[in-house]
Amino acid sequence: MGLSLTQSLLKEHSVQSLLSQNRTFDAVICEVFMNEAHFGFAEHFNAPLITFSTLGASSWTTDLVGSPSPPSYVPHFLLQFGDHMNFFERAHNLLFILYQGAYEQYVYLPKQEQLYKKYFPNNKQNFYDMRKNTALVLLNNHVSLGFPRPYAPNMIEVGGMHINRKCQQLPRDIVDFIQGAQHGVIYFSLGSYIKSSSLPLEMREALVETLRNLKQRVLWKFEELNLPGKPDNVFISDWFPQDDILAHEKVILFITHGGLLSTTESIYHGKPVLGIPFFGDQFMNMARAQQSGYGLTLRFTELTAETFKNSINKLLSDPSYTQKVHDMSVRFRDQHETPLERAVYWVEHVTRQKGARYLRSASQDLNFIQYYNLDVLIMIIGGLGFIIVGFLKRKKVMH
Image (cartoon, rainbow, N blue to C red; front, side, top):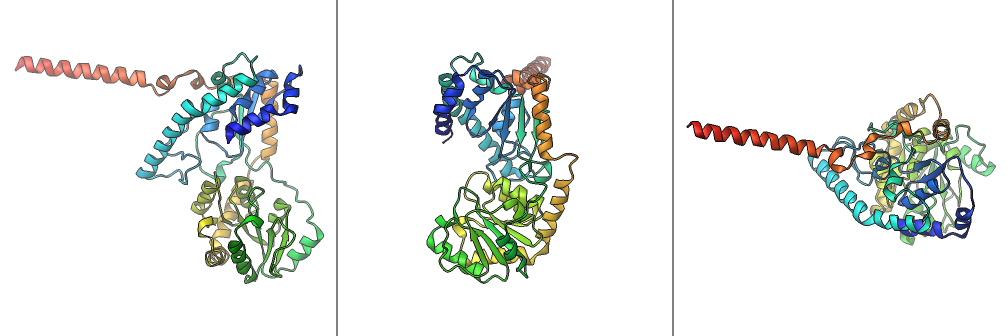
């Protein structure tokens, strides 16, 4: 998927037209999602490379700036582990990271390199040096949302910068629906990619039946104008101002697909979550929500009217979920600047400092053996072995 998407953008007529122009920019900002060939825009336009990771920190980002990522307590972003792993989880994590690293180095990146050479033939940097000269990485994360981990100085957390600190007025029909809810409102959205209207018929019917029997009112992002058998306590629309809805005091639960933007919004606004993850980091996000105590995970394959009802009832009847997410919200909001202000500052700083080379880690100039001091360890072990063998020989001669 990554290779085809990477090439699709580079082949676009408008992109080719832009590349043919003799233009420069102050900075080039690229998302990091299996699209490394796109980083070539930076040298082409004579600008520092700034990357943004919507998934937060991962090997895709740490490798760009030489940031340490110890597998003993930093789980791979696709695994549902926390930072306190037992022996088997650490072994699983290490093996998974080694496999991904080998696949990336010997299979995936060479294919991205081919695209880089094809579409940026005049760039002087080779593909791998170009990746290591990333000036800044912006991360869609915040330590209060996950767990502490090491970062290079040019990795900056800006999680939540998409959240509007000044809520907008909701549409009149939505306001009236919410205000009429005596027992609170549940907001139900599976994001922009997964469509509730495309769920299997029997599953939609199970959802409808469960929602019908709730005393709460429900705002459901449903992509078709007509929902057969729609209950009176359900309001459907193909779009909702999610951020503003979650900010409303009468909203008491968020049913979500578990995307990082959605879980971040739920924490900021202090709403517990019921997650139905489908792919990618959604499983890890919801595992983290469950481990942190502010949400429950309901797998798509286990979704029935009974499991759906039981999960909702558990979240609404146990106040610990709401209290936990409220505490996390207080911590998340306690920042001396907004994430957006932080992102703007660092982008402008790197631009003013012409790439801010002083932030670049020397680890980017070391190979695998040097980075892990394997040559030094071999010398030490060899020296100790030589001394031990000599000692044993001498002892044998003396006897």
